[in-house]
Image 1 (tube, rainbow, N blue to C red):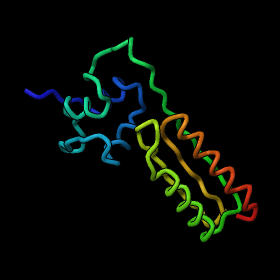
Image 2 (image 1 turned 90 degrees about the horizontal axis):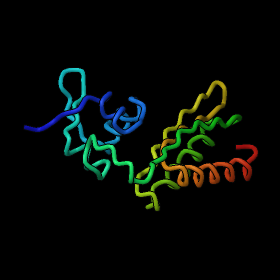
Image 3 (image 1 turned 180 degrees about the vertical axis):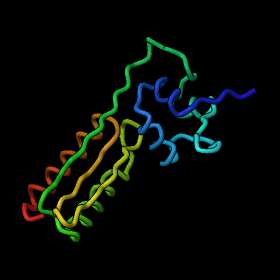
Image 4 (image 1 turned 90 degrees about the vertical axis):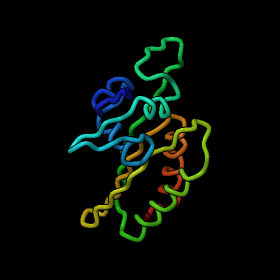
Length: 143
């Protein structure tokens, strides 16, 4: 009989926030079955995500770090927000050493002319993306 986990159980097993696990499900990085209003994750799908047996506390395995960052860029109109978003998404589209994709979302507030970029992922990949965003905003101080 297949073993299933709740989103909360998966979050606890992986040391992640429940919202992060739900994001993985939404992005298709973690397969899940919706039962009523809740998701259930099969043990095999959890193992496919982690590459290790589910629920096993393997102290010999290398620690895994994930970064979550919110970047707020001010003075950004709609066209500039679209250009920045396209550039950021293109920058993360290629293969990376970490093997896990970065998760990036952008939100533009037209009234305040502010762009927020939310990044979840590997520390090195996130740092590289932050350097790109820094470069783009310095080059175009009138973003």
